[in-house]
Length: 322
Image 1 (cartoon, rainbow, N blue to C red):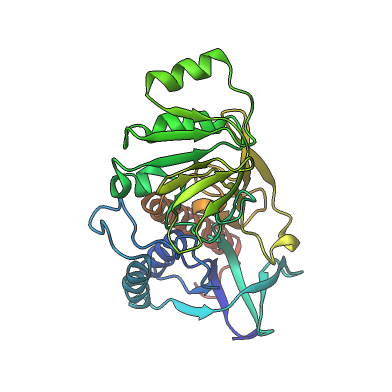
Image 2 (cartoon, rainbow, N blue to C red):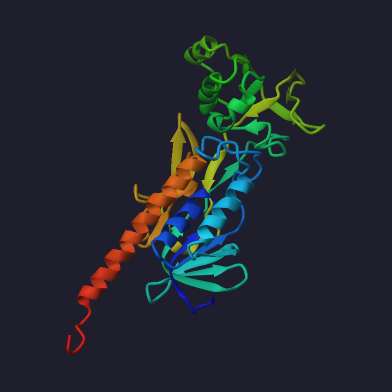
């Protein structure tokens, strides 16, 4: 692969966004290289939801089906991490992989997703995507009517508690390190029958496997079977510093929710020729939304290439005798 073939597009990231982008570009008869490090965000989850036609499918099974479909249209896939990427002097993009090979392409499409930076509470990371959750649209139905705690680390904690009360009447908000609740917040929580437990959480009781309860720093304990947290969502940009992408913070309810790559509605970033789709640019996107973004962005990339090819053809001198 090194320095021999110039691909139309290198897609970096093989989750829903990257796979659907590769599928779309392959069907558009583009030469595509899909680079996937195999670090899909939802890998720890037992199942994925709200994806029409695939409700309840295991993430690994979904990816296996998608990879088979993508392969039908000529896309080449490599399991590798990107260690460096830049625009070369000839205008093409060069991507260096962790086995030291170099791939070149006219366009890059980033679908690298995000990293969930979890609250620093012992037990949270161990049970993440199992009993420790964040999205009710992903997991709410499966834990309906159960005892659910919400760990407040900022203003969004109140909003999470109110949201999750749609799925269960047994919601407890642990104020933890969140801001002091004012009278308005308390009235809103009371209106939805959300209990409030003041004090900082020390750790989760996960000694015997599944979450059994929440232990506060003063020794108090609350028995809950699931805990809702608010991760910081950070765009995964390992090895991509050389592109000079513009990033920005996302705020939700007065709390910094994370950082993302800035792009327009078609996925074009601040760097000409580099596009982004899925969670790397839209932090709150679900799997089905990421897949849709992959399609839309791939279509924009294909149109961009057609426009460039047409411009070059018009500018090219006519052959003698034509």
